[in-house]
Length: 228
Image (cartoon, rainbow, N blue to C red; front, side, top):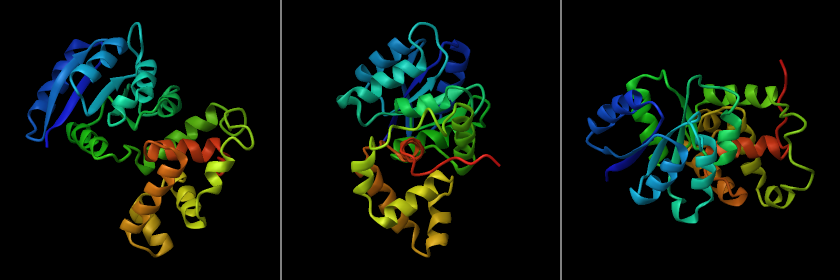
């Protein structure tokens, strides 16, 4: 199955470079290019994209607003958005994940990292490595995530109560930036079992992917960021 990729960036030269790279792979193709967020949303629908590489900063409708529109459209529930940032962790990363992005990637990433990001997102996994998760937590802290950004008590209570004790345990470890293999080693279970717990937690909490789980864990107050 060919992965249909949409490129959304206001820099034509960068889009051209990405297009050459993506189209060189046998399992993916670029099905559209957008110079702003509004165009990206329209092309996501018309070109039937699977993955959108979305620049955060674009004129007019920016990548953040475009991601919200895509995530809010039931007909585009299969679409995965990977945010492209000048810096891997910046002031908009947490907002991007809340908006529904599956993860983020620095524009300075190596070609293989970009291609891997597309495949990971298309497979329904979150492009949120342990290193990136730690960066997300740092950003969350910088934005006051330990106080103002935490949801009101009870906002997540019903959904959180639906989690089993094991699912909550796995969620805490996911929020701590641990991979499935690392969690499996800690809990002495198989990576497949961990993946099952993660998927069940996502379903119960209404999270699109692993990235959303991390945000939910902090916003619900299940996990509190610590300043070292």
